Amino acid sequence: MAKTLSFAYESPLEVKVGDDETTFTLICKNEDRVVDLTGSKSIIAKIGNRSGYLRGQLISLDNSAGLHEGKINLTFEKSTLDNFPPGFYNLEIWVIDSNGTSIYPSGNPLSFTVTSNLESGSGTTITTVAFDDFVKAMSKAASTIAKGDKGDTGPQGKQGEPGPTGPQGAKGDTGPKGDKGDIGTVDNDGLTTAPAFVDLQTQVNNSAVGTNLLLKTYNQFSITGVNAINQGQAMYGLSRRLEAGTTVTLSFDAVSTTPESFIIQTDGYDGGSWMACINDTVGTTKKHYVATIKLDNYSSLGVYLHLDNIPWTTTITFSNMKLELGSHATDWCPNPTEILTQADYAKIKAAIVSLGGHL
Image 1 (spheres, one colour):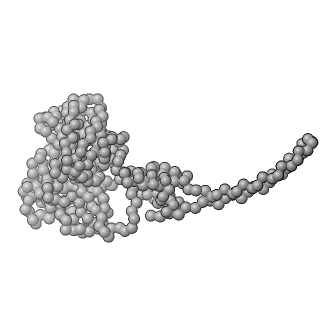
Image 2 (cartoon, one colour):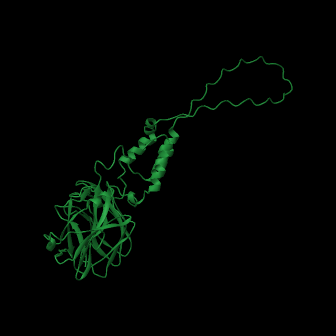
Image 3 (cartoon, one colour):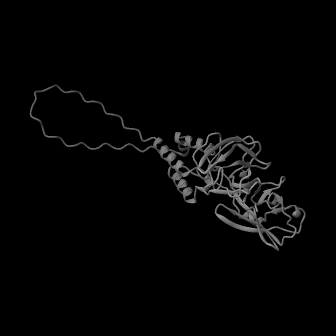
């Protein structure tokens, strides 16, 4: 049975570091029907991120209002948020009753955001960019740094009177080598205004273009039909919230055990936007799909799959899925947060300092 976990309509979707009064309201459903949780022995919120499991927090059952409708109120303890740096986190709800343990959702965990407060940092920040792109820009910038001025050419001597041709004399000694000019210097202002760095800044300002906004797409996603019952299931979560009116492009590969149809949906706070133009029949040969859509409301949860009357014997497998800003589809790549490591950051910092810059 497909279990789902979603935010209630009035619930916030993000919380600031140190805020222990913001409450998430969550709804547990089974086969799209709310679950009566009044008989639960305990309810635990399990929290993790892309590196794995972090910790669990008990949900208070003292206030049972809403439990019969599958509603859960989750208020983070201060100690929890103090230990969570700003970023994206995953959430599961574990319900323990007399029948055993039920985990919501059945598919990908629900995503939420921890944002920084004014005390979380200070000073100028540097935007994360792909390490390879940064190295190329650094190399290009180094080539633009001016070298020392070349010394002036001395005056040409007066030409002597031609004399009779005599025997060839011995080769004279090689004269001393002239002094090398001073190496040019560059300060931080000069470094940041170099053409290559201006190009890099432009790339940073537009870094979301071509970036995969979905998480964990390096794993294939498969779903099996359930006869004549239409069903939807979460596929991949978003790494950032997308505002209403945003134009995005979704691309992916799909292959099915038997020819059947499907629809992809971006799931948002108010029901999401149907990408009906992807409504197609997929066969047993892998096929590449691309669709561009303008979101009709903001989307913060991820991408969902909707199956139409798929036999239980049919399995559709999706791979190389990418959601990006704009109307142009580019080759698949993982989300930048799944690429850049602490070692990469250390190399970037060392490169900036070695060229006279600072963070």
